[in-house]
Length: 276
Image (cartoon, rainbow, N blue to C red; front, side):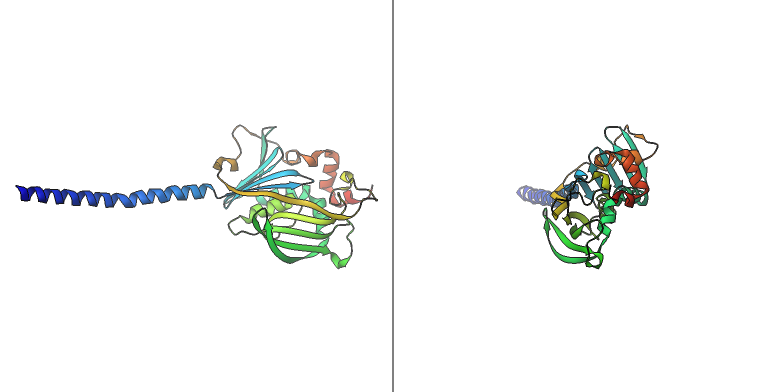
């Protein structure tokens, strides 16, 4: 009888030990899964930027989507098609277009800035550093031929964040939104030597002949962080109606102060740089 009890005890201990060992890998797997889920939730990079023309701009970007907040106007896009949806929170209206078309719209709206900046060439790499905690590559541009451009913009210093995990579609879209050239990276900062409104269309310039030429900021990044966000922020909210066209919707904000001039800008950007 005693022998039977001893055998039963060891058999029960052996079975319980086997059960515990079989559960241990499951517990570890669940813990790893939770850690992985938390890591995945924080793959969203949030970047806060400031520009004298566009004001505060906030960008959320993941390897598979991006969201750009510019005042009342929000732009979102997702892989793999990268169709861009523009929507206005106030008007509850939205429009959508293919990525190449969306880039064209942004490029047209900032054509005057791009025209001024593109006179500075060629671009050269000029070291690296940190901008708002992000590793950045610096590019510099000088007026073609070493002479001052007709826009009186010189000594451009342009910083971009190159990260292979970030979609190139986001970097390109953000760059043209600021009127900057895509330089194989996400735009973080740009300064130039000139007058305060040298990159603005003629009707928006406030500079005087007495104003001094000095280093000015066209774009600066004030903050960057990895954050956890809901996946829904990369989609248009429910209840938004589709607008007939995107022109008026896209020109919401600082660039719509004078719709007549802006429409002229879209038709003939260079004409707006002629002196008044």
